[in-house]
Image (cartoon, rainbow, N blue to C red; front, side, top):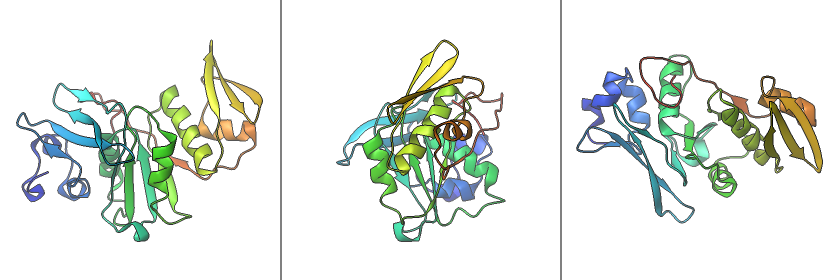
Length: 214
């Protein structure tokens, strides 16, 4: 992103203030059409896909990972994980007056939640940092909350959908719950795991059709 002090047209039009723009200036850039581009890389740092946002375009990265932080890794105190950079941008914009993001880090996973990449990303920061998941209210978003929580604890859980039920396969046992009741909190109570990850869910705005808006 060039000359963030001059603003970025799309972010300005969406009401994203300059303080928030600065937090993501290293990973977001404009192309010649005014679209926002974010590069996602594999574990070896190779470019594998891009997240693209424009007035009429929204494309998630299919794979890879993206990280950024205004602080050195050893100084990070909170990590925010989402499937898209723009999810994180809107979340920060909503909370920037109530929360200090100077010692935070941001990790975007793309559409594919790759366990090895997520854990490698988390491992860059001090043990005991606060972890927030920033996924949508959708069932897929709620399952992603659960996957990250299990991985943080060194566990794993597989999920499938049977009619209107979510079936969790955990430690060789199946746990069933209705789609409407399913959430990170309810799932962890059901399987007997203590929650350490905090979820942040979006406030939906109808004026602009990103995946989930804040």
